[in-house]
Image (tube, rainbow, N blue to C red):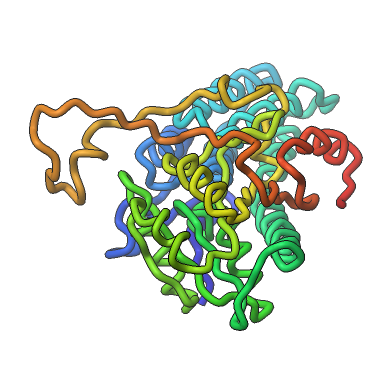
Length: 358
């Protein structure tokens, strides 16, 4: 049975509450923009593609219920709602790009029928679900092909290390970095996958491990601090991670801990790949130094499942993301348009404009 984290039917949205996984599967109703913002902020839903999809669908659900007298009234409500959703988690670029795109659709539309324009916006948002799944499959297949052509494998196939959660739970479906693992497995080329626990929020231990067990993939969970010795003692074919934002120069913001894994991969000559659909690429921010890094509450670091594990009174610093320099992304950046060297991602802008694939 395929995992489903987002359930949507016209005017109705439910999301799988990822705070309760892996112990309990419970779906939460999202009835309005405020519900969507809270679900994103509290990390009931997370993962850059899923943040944008749930945010936009929460807007669509509320939009469908509302009546507007004028196009100006519709536009003002839409811009206010979309800009608010962007504030929930600022590091991931997907929600921001979607908000700008939808606002541009409204401002450039020649339609003078308010209901027709409203429905056009809703239709466009609904199409995001199917498009994200197809983009993830294309991306994953391109990356799997690239790994086969460049990476070492054992007789039993490729061994992949991944970090954080990048599967069904982080996207509309299939996944990005975890989608690459699925594509290798589908071709009978996956020997094993290692997933890190991803402290302090444990997305790897709670969510990625949940998906790997669900799909019956050959897999092992390791602590974040075990990556160096894993690379030294086991034959790792490649590291594949996701991304929340890719700068113009190829620097990548991803879950905290990604940078140190990239450094270790470089030292051990393990190819390092980033799986990031075009929606994760920022064509304005030039390099990683200008990416806003979200900082999370201290209790995510000091508590585990409501139980304090750190001494009371200790100061905490809890950045949710770090930036991996382009020069450490030695395998490439996989997108639905193909796999690019990190310093070639500028080419994506023209390919997106032309709608071409490599």
